[in-house]
Image (cartoon, rainbow, N blue to C red; front, side, top):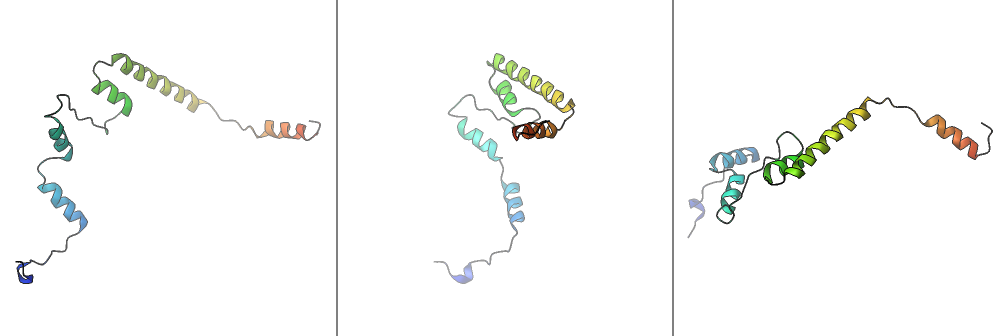
Length: 113
């Protein structure tokens, strides 16, 4: 039986302190824990870093699908062409379309322009 006097008073702890204590006392990262859980059942369990530099999909295809060289090369070419198109768009100067719209609207209303 548990009696009130046998129970220690709970220490007041901030959420940050609780998380830090949990992380520091945990001996294995959750990613590694998941990997170790599935590794006995599958021979090809890999850890993919989603936070690395570059395009997520291209990195995934090129790094985790070793036989997909054509898809990997196509993704890289597509990214290169997108970057070139983006640079062309950025290099263009913008122009206002207000005047042509006003002229068209005036003509529709019957004004001689």
